[in-house]
Each structure stands twice: as C-alpha cells, then as structure tokens.
Image: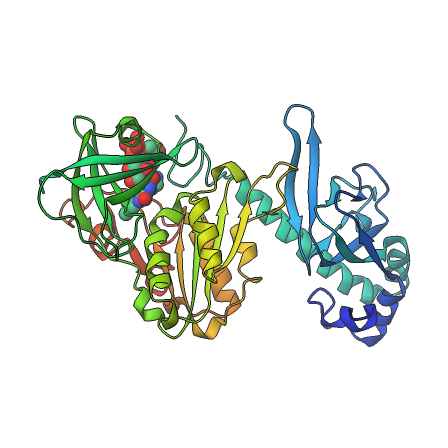
Amino acid sequence: MRTIEQYLPDHPFFAGLGADAMSLVGGCAANVSFAADEFLFREGEPADRFFVIRRGRVAIEVHAPAAGTVVLDTADAGDIVGWSWLVPPYRWLFDARAVEATGAVTFDGRCLRDKCEEDPRMGYELTRRVIQVMSDRLVASRVRLLDLYGAAGAGHAAPR
Amino acid sequence: MVPRPFRLVGRRQDTTDTFTVLLEPTEGDPLGFVPGQFTMLSAFGVGEVPVSVSGAAHVAGPLQHTVRDVGAVTHALSRASVGDVLGVRGPYGTGWDVAHGHGKDVVFVAGGIGLAPLRPAVLEVLSHRDRYRRVVVLYGTRSPDDLLFADSLADWQGQGVELLVTVDYGPPSWAGRVGLVTTLIPRAGFDPKYTLAFVCGPEVMMRRSAMALVERGVTPDSIRVSLERNMRCGVGLCGHCQFRELFICVDGPVLSYARVAGLLGYREV
Ligand SMILES: Cc1cc2nc3c(=O)[nH]c(=O)nc-3n(C[C@H](O)[C@H](O)[C@H](O)COP(=O)(O)OP(=O)(O)OC[C@H]3O[C@@H](n4cnc5c(N)ncnc54)[C@H](O)[C@@H]3O)c2cc1C
C-alpha cells in the first residue's frame, strides 16, 4: 500500500492543492483501520476528524426510535467521510460504521482548522473542496426525497 | 388495433408491488419483438396499458412482462391468475439498438422497474458476448426488498458482467451500497470513448444518469434513454404521447439522448 504522502496528491479531493499545502495537510493525517461493525464516530460526539476511505465500506446511519437504524449513505474507496469538523458546533450529526474491514486516512480537524486560520489561501482551497462534498450529499438527499422508485414517486408510481 | 388473446401460463411475484406474467397466444404465432419494445397489455373490461417486454428476444418461450402495480389497470393485471386470458397489441416502438455497441463497452443504467425493459437488451448482449468488450450493469432501486431479477443478476455476474447495485435506503444488515445510481457511474470500469449506454428508469433518474455519463466522457449520441410517457393508441394516431415533434409510441420509447436532452424534464402535455 502506498504511503500517505504518495496517496494523497493523486486523490481528486486534494488535486491541485500545491506542494506546501499538501505537506501541511499531510502533517495532520494518519492511517487508521476499523474492523467490521466498528464505529468511526457516533452522533453527538465532537467532530474533530474527517476520513478518506482507502478500502472497505462505511455506512452513514441514523437511529430513529420508530424506524430503527437506517443507512442513509455508504462511502467506498476514494470517498470522503465527514464535514462536521469544519462547521460549528463541530459535532457529528450521524453515526459512521464500518460495514466491513475498512482502511482510511484520518485527518485531525482541529489541526487543519488551525492551519486554515493561519493560511487563508489554503483554508479557502480546503473549504471549497469540502463544499463540493456537502453539495453532492445535499443533491443526493434532495433527489431521494422524491422517492423516485416508491409509491409516491415521480416514476411510474403514484399515491394510491 | 384489436388485442390478441393471450393466456397467462405463469406468474411470479417479484416484490411486494411488482410481478411478472408469462403469456402465450391462445392461437397463432408467438409475438416477435426486439429488446426495448413494448406491447399494449389489457385486462378485459378494465383497460390497457403500455408495458415493455422483460424476457429474452432470441429464445422461444412465453411473452414476458414485468409490471409494477400502480393503478387501475396494472392492479387488475396483478390479479390475473394462470389460465386467465389477457389482451396483447403490438409489439410497438423502437428498441435498444444493442448492435451499435459491437466492439464497444456497453453500460446499462437501470432505476427501479427500469431494469425490466433493459433485461432483454442485457440478455441479447450476453447471447453474443464476444461481440462486445466490457458489459456493465448499474442498478439503483429503493431498498434491498425491491431488487428485481435477483437470479438474473447473479447469473449475469457469473457471465462476466460488472454489476454495481445501490439502494436509496438500507437496513443495517444490508452490506451493499446506499446512494443514488448516479454515484456508480464514476466507479464503473468502462472506457467512455468507446461506450454505448442504455438508461431506463424514472425520468429524473434518466436525466441525472445521462448527465453523469456525459461528465464521464460518453457523448450524448452514445446514450439511449426510454421515454415512457403516458400513451394510448401505441401507433402514432391519437397524439396522447406527443412530445413536441415526437410521438413517443412510434419515434420512441427508446431515443438517443442527443435528440431528447432538451426534452427531458419537459412537463407532460
Ligand atoms: C413505453 C412504455 C413502457 C412501459 N413499460 C413498463 C413496464 O415494463 N413495467 C411497468 O410496470 N410499467 C411500464 N410502463 C408504465 C405503465 O404503462 C404504467 O404504470 C401504467 O400505464 C399505469 O396504468 P394504471 O391504469 O395501472 O395506472 P393509472 O391509474 O393510469 O396511473 C397510476 C399512476 O401512474 C402514473 N403513470 C401512468 N402511466 C405512466 C407512465 N407511462 N409513466 C409514468 N407514470 C405513469 C399515472 O400518472 C398515475 O399517477 C411503461 C410505460 C410506457 C409508456
């Protein structure tokens, strides 16, 4: 497996960040692994990290008393998990659970936030990238609100 | 325009709201069709609806339709049992032009019941596997309980199809993907420059899938979509399914995305 320094610059999230910024970001990164069913984080905990998944699969889920636990999204190799580290109050809004044995690069959010404060140019670049992740999630949530394949969907179906 | 009587010789409940009927003509020749075509299927005394053929075109056997029970006619069809007689007109419409994919990668993107109209095209490609390069099936549906043709899917994988499945919502026991079918497009192994793509599902899903394919580098004229607008006569006479200059029942349902990109999302007339 490639080292963090080798892996990160090729990842689309970091592409074009520049060598200096890349080494700052790399300084806040570490490899981590999770066994199946181990949690990366739980709702309500301080959000002080984010993850780039290198292998395996992570389920983003929420527990609702009536519906039980629902998986809202999954993240596979290459996906980014977590943006709450950049947005006050810096708390996780969902649970993230490894569905299978999972390897990831984790980034220390507090360390990154401090570096972003010191270097606004890098802060802007990183924020822009996180906004892309958030935007993708927002669009996916909105499309799923349409329940395209369901009884009330805009597909073939209509409410009875 | 008079429906031919077909006898129900088999029936399968695929999911809670979707079922498959197997039909044979009470007399005369079986129905020939090309993948992607539909028939006007009637429950006598209730009405008739357009439904795509979901079985193989290249092997003899009963006519197969996979139907989602959404309203009056589809509900009446869902109540039919083996031995009952249904009406069939057709086949009508344009098909999936899989032969244009010879020598290329072929990518099928299905959403929900949209896998049913695509199934004959996948089967056609697999019956001449050596004529194509990679075969990719990307399938998104509502939940693991709504997955159609589970046996076929496993079989296709056994024949070297790259199959990626995702659902909108999953229970924690679901180890597969959760997310939109569009998220599978950047992940699948195909060469966008040498790809012919077939997309079928709800219109919003087709629109976004086509956009994601274009973003990956597939040209709009190498993408086919199936516009399943409401239709009545099936033969281009009544105008019920007219969509600007197109009569979907005869010009479609399968159309090139290059031709209809501007029409997708256009409200029903
Ligand atoms: C070319 C073509 C191929 C089709 N193939 C299949 C298929 O393989 N399997 C399948 O289950 N269905 C298919 N459909 C859709 C099917 O024709 C409709 O679900 C059916 O007409 C509904 O009739 P109904 O009387 O049961 O419901 P209705 O009471 O008429 O309608 C119930 C609801 O479904 C909506 N609806 C009706 N027709 C359509 C449509 N074409 N597209 C989107 N929403 C619609 C109506 O607006 C209404 O809200 C196809 C449609 C077309 C045009």
